[in-house]
Amino acid sequence: MPDPRVFIIRHGETEWSLNGRHTGTTELKLTPNGEKRILATGKALVGDDRLIVPGNLAHIYVSPRHRAQRTLELLHLGTSAQYPWNPPTSPTTSSNPPSSPSTPRTKASITIDPRLAEWNYGSYEGLKSGEIREERKKKGLNADWDIWRDGCENGEMPREVAERVDSLIREIREKWHEGRFGERGRPNDVLLVAHGHVLRALAARWVGVELEKGPSLILEAGGVGTLSYEHHSIDEPAILLGGAFVVDVVEKEREEKEKAEEKAGKAE
Image (cartoon, rainbow, N blue to C red; front, side, top):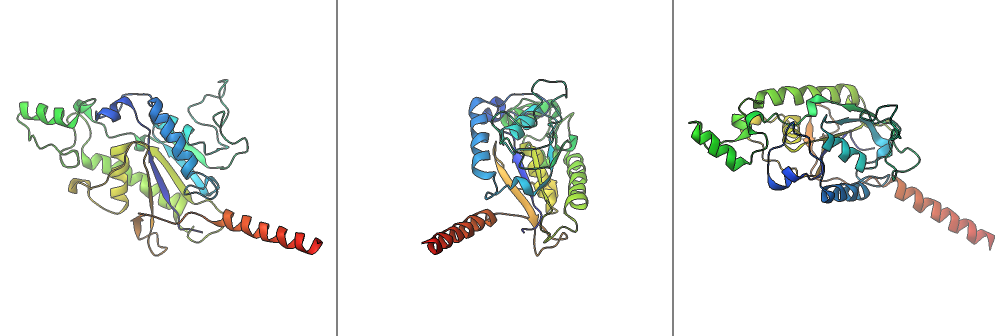
């Protein structure tokens, strides 16, 4: 059983993420290509013998924004829990999208968490980085704007973003990870579906990096990252650059095949 992990997934492509506009509170749909890529991500990375094993998920946190929620739906995890954004009286309240597995693959609960909302860009909402620097220059502010250092006018500063992601990190460790190292049969992974800047901030704070230092982390639209621990210790958080896929299912299939072949041999 691997150490507890946190999978961070950035929502799929939108028109604004495609052209580099900062998208915080603005609600945008995924592009058709964005939806296709998330579907492909789900097929490639979700499954009993894949990176994200639905049965190992203890909890799912998702941003309040619709583009993140749609991304979670398209991953087709096969949740038994009701999506919180689907009201009970809605005719589309099935816990899974139509093409999801008919049998639930995970009992993980789902929380819409405002701590995963994208960085509040304030006056910079909808602008590209170059446009922001031009605006700052006109106002007599430093033109070498860096969000990690300078934050956003009428929006959030780095320390404010750090405070909210730190709060979520503490909750994940205390509620879902502490005391679960090496446990079998008990889900201990957590899934986060949110946005580029807030997830990069969370990854930096996971390993104790101050945001003002400008963490050199990249998470593309629809991208997946993994956070975990070193030396099986909750006191040694780490960013998992690469890990082996779970092979329990593959091994079980191999053993069953060998038993079947052996049984067939005896029957002859």
